[in-house]
Figure: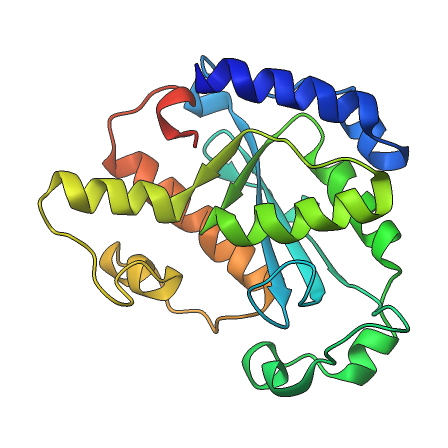
Amino acid sequence: MAGIFDRLRGKRHARQAHGPLAEFYTHPHPDAATPLHSAPLLAVDVETTGLHPGRDQLLSIGWVPVNGLTIDLSGAGHVILQGAADAEPAVGHSATIHGLTDTDIAGGVPAADALAQLLTALQGRAMLVHYAAMEHGFLGHACRTHFHADLTVPTVDTFALERRHMERMATYPRGEDLRLPRVRARYRLPHYRSHHALTDALACAELYLALVAHGKATTLGPLLL
């Protein structure tokens, strides 16, 4: 039932969309029956000034394609968004987390252009993220602001996959157990510095391949939100 609802919602958003988002919706996405060995995904990460879309700023977006079971670094991208003239709050204390300054933001790409780059990379792919609420929230808000419709895209969330796995094993996650570096460590993946959008997108892509290798799914369906 949820799948039918999502398809209807996606069609409504496609009718409402303008510009690059309208073009994005003309490209079919992989469906639940797509074999994992050929599933096209785009690992995406965002950096922000906080947790609340509409109140906090979207600062940067990073992405890395995953073609089946292969990470394609040649298609990776990273963009810093130019802050709106009246944007509040400024980067402020969040700079200590992601390293971006007000000067970086002032020299960034206009938000609509940054989103257009992401949407082009995401055409025909499922979105791969770690903790989908952030990407769905901030990218959806940005698309509504600039292109008049929400972003509806099939999504695989490594946060949700690992939580599901831990619950099946009766090992219920606590505190930071599901943070990206902690999950990667459990799968013996190398440590990367967190909170750079491109690095975190790559870290998510690598974690996805580890989860697939340890799991039983053979098609995209069981992994989708």
